[in-house]
Length: 93
Image 1: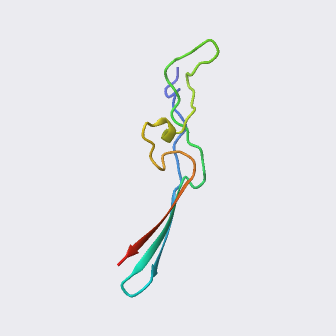
Image 2: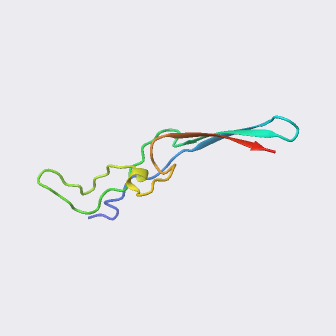
Image 3: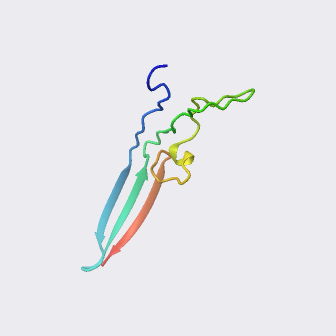
């Protein structure tokens, strides 16, 4: 078998953040933020299975069926899942 036969697809993700600071008074300002993870909504799949587990009708060798955030036991925002948006406001005084 050639080297790297069970290597999965490469991982890439495009994140974006926009921020706007607005002065309310001389001492008080507000910062508005909008952040997007995986803005292009490009699916990134986990590494393929390398163990052989076959039954009468199916076999999972080389099967890729989940994104890294679903396959992980503790998913992290921005780790290959679908597009996520978050908004925030920060008051600075």
